[in-house]
Amino acid sequence: MALDLEVIARKAEGGSGYPPLLFVHGSCHAAWCWDEHFLPYFAERGFDAYALSLRGHGASASPRSLRWTSIASYVADVEQGAADLPREPVVIGHSLGGFVVQKYLETHEAPGAVLVAPSPRRGMRSVWLRSSLRDPWPFFMMWLTLDPYALFATPERCHRFLFSPDMDEETVRRYWARLGPESVRCAVETIGKPPDAERIRGTPMLILGAAEDRIVPEPPLRDTAADYGADLTMVPDMAHDMMLEDNWQEAAGTMLNWLNRTFSPA
Image 1 (tube, rainbow, N blue to C red):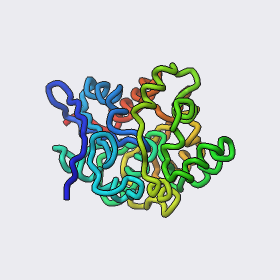
Image 2: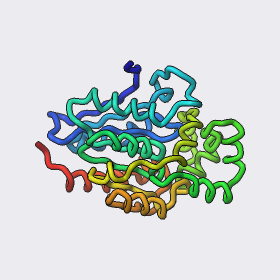
Image 3: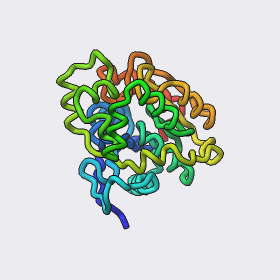
């Protein structure tokens, strides 16, 4: 049964000959994070751009407790969002949304995909271990409360994990106020069975990493790129929330260049 899912749309003036872009947010975010900069940026450059809020996020409904929502349920949301578009979209996922996109690609042929600071294919176990040894208290609280939001539960934590140190505090606080709870089941599932690389390998793919990311470092992104035969670009002077950073245009421009190399307007 179809859910009432929030989708923000920014369309190219005069129509677009490119495949549409479908953006999927990461943990504790919603469609708004793409609409701050990326949706209008790509619409102005000839792409119809859509951002989906997964169930239980933003203005999207959820038929059950968000805490126990599965990756498969989020994949179903992406399926619904893609099915509502006039053409098969290029799917673009950030962080946990990047893992959801990988699982979506196991069973769907998309014209292309972009993974932005994604949860790596081989799992988050080593990433979490590294981060929790360096900064144990937020991770302790995440498992105590069974809510990944604990990692970002204060403006200071939000700034530390998601943004560059020189990011304006008022801007960080504004974004922090829009974050919300997340499924702990999904967090656990990202350390389980990895996506099937053989099913995904043929999909044209770009992986964007942030050189100063405190959550997902470069080595597991290189492994993910190798598993899929994907292009990997590490964007300097950026932290995890690349689409909201002050220099977001660096990431958007890198993505645009790849899209223009990969697709020609019909």
